[in-house]
Image (cartoon, rainbow over the protein chains, first blue to last red):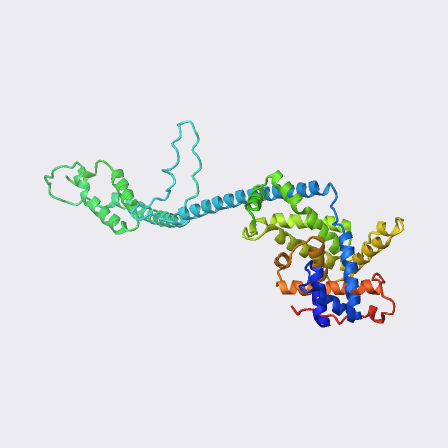
Length: 233
Length: 197
């Protein structure tokens, strides 16, 4: 038995374990003052530890803590529910935005060009109801229709101006001496030459618009009724 | 761990008021007792006890059902006390003056011994103090303390042995140990030894 072993045994006693050979320990303590002093202090400590009473919490602490925990739980649940609803609303908004964007950019192939695609979708109105203002058409389609309309208007004005000028010269032309021809219907046969001329003009302008053709037709209708007689037909 | 603890935790997670009350009642005494010893201040111990249970409640979802509840809660309590002591060191210390100024009965030897042990405890390092309180005051075995503090058992034994030696040394210096006549080595403490962690 040495001091190290003796101190180990003292620690075991403080752990609540008795040494296997107490006589050996007592023998060393008898001979070693340092270990004897340490052993005495350990006995005092054991005595003091028996007097050491656990600190009891105040009576109201349990209720106070439990209330705090319950309040915290309810707050967290409320926050969690609110977050879930907000996430749902945000998702719905995102989906709606995506759908509206898709509607605006997608063009369906094979459908005829319609400068006012939304007109068909508007509900029918009664005779007394004021028509609703048309909603703004989609971006690309709107641009194309505007360009076509502008070009048609320019071509129509040009054709109208040309036909209007040529009308002035017709009464001054001498009537050609032509043999009497037995022509079948239509009654407007004498004007066929002019019609073909007009069709030629409109045919040249056809790729752009059909309004010159309409303008020529109007011109032919406006011709004086006794022209046939003047032409000897 | 026990099936009873698992059931209790599940009920707490569902927000049952009775289960929450039960959880607090089960572990409050030990948590509070530990906090008082570590913080040496009852008022602080009450606040920290509340914080401990709040932390426990919020972390219940992450509790491993294969582990016992008590060491887990003890570990949280020790960590909260450590944090509190660090914060207290940075602000003016509020001393519980009431204990010092109220005159009490003339202390006898037992009372004096007790106050010397408590004073010696307050001077220990936090780790040594924690292990000493858990072992001697709360009766927890080495293995349970090791789980609570997340340390090997050997480390826990070393800390406890060193804590005892420091307390014994203080008791001897303060004259709380009967000295034999002619024993010149009574004040000599064997060189601090302990198993290395």
